[in-house]
Length: 392
Image 1 (cartoon, helix red, strand yellow):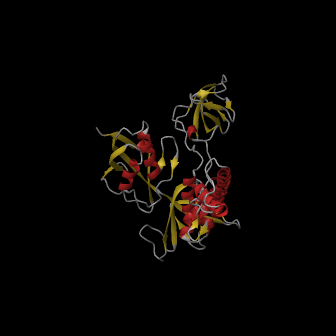
Image 2 (cartoon, helix red, strand yellow):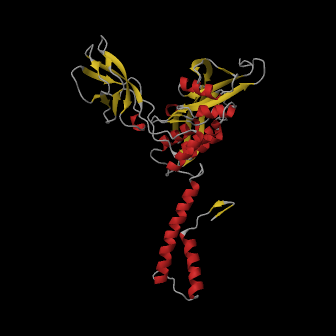
Image 3 (cartoon, rainbow, N blue to C red):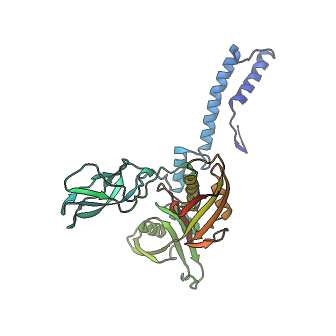
C-alpha cells in the first residue's frame, strides 16, 4: 500500500492470509484451504501472481528515487542533473617498437601480453634511424584486465620481418569496469548542485560532471582586497583533481557569474558562444600522499586474498589507484582522513580481529590520529603505498 510513509509491498504470506480470510467469510470457518486441497491450491496460485504484481509495483515506485533505483532506471535519473554512467573503458599506454629503420608501423597493429591481453596502435609511426619508435596503444577489450604492468606487452601478434621487438616502458592505465550503481549514486549526489549557474555550489557541481574530474573545490574572495592566498578582490579559485584542462576551462566559463574573475596558476583561452576569447584560470589540487603500514591480527575466517582486500578497501576510502589499475574517487577535497575510519575500513574484511597503523604523510611519519586536509588539498594513496603485515 502507499501512504505518507511510502510504499509497502504486500508479500505472498500477507496476500494468502487475506484471501484465506475472505474464503472463510464466503464458505464458512470449516472450509478446507490446506496445501493440497483444491481451494488451497487455487488461493496459493492467485496469491503468487498477485505477489509478483506487488513486487513489480514496488520496483516501479523505487525507480523514481536515486537511493533505490537500479540499473537503467538509475541511468535515466542521471539525465536530470546532466550526468551519465561511466562505461567500461580500455586501458591506454605507450609501447616502444624496435625494427628496421624507416619502416612504417601501420595504425591498428596489434601487440599483446603472454596472458593474451591485446592492444592496438592508435596511429602509424615510422621507426627512426636507430630502428626505434614510441606509439600510443589502447586495449582491444575494455575493463581492468587491460591495465598491465610495465614490460609485459612483448608479443607481436602478426609478426613481420621489419618488427623485431616490442615492450611497454610504463604500465597501461585507465582501464575500468562499468560504473556501479553505488558509485553512480555518489557522483549523482556530488553533482546535484550543478543544475544552476553563478553560485559556488553550481560551479563545483558542474566541474564534478566533467569527464575525468575526481575532486573539485571552489574558494571565493568576496572582499575588494587581495586575500592571503593572492586571490584578487571579487574573484574565485577552482582546485581540480583529474580532468582535461580545456574541458575544465570551458565548464568554468559556461558556469561562472559574469564579471567575476577566475584565479589560478593555469591559464586557458576559451571562447564564448559569440566567439569572444576569454582567459580562464584555475589550479590543480595539491595531492597529499598517504602511505600506510597496516598491522593486523586475524583468525581462521581471514580469506586467502585478505591482504589484497584490505588494500582495496583502503584505496576506495581514501582515493587513488588500486592494484588492478582501477581509480577510485575516495575522499573529496578538504576532507580529512579520519583515523577511526581507517580502522573500521580494515575491519570490513572478515577474519580481521585487530588493526593498528603506521602512517606517513608525504613521506613524513604521522601519529595515529586524523590527517587534516586543507580545502585546496586532496588525500590520495595507491595499493603500492599500502603494506599489510600480520602480527605474530
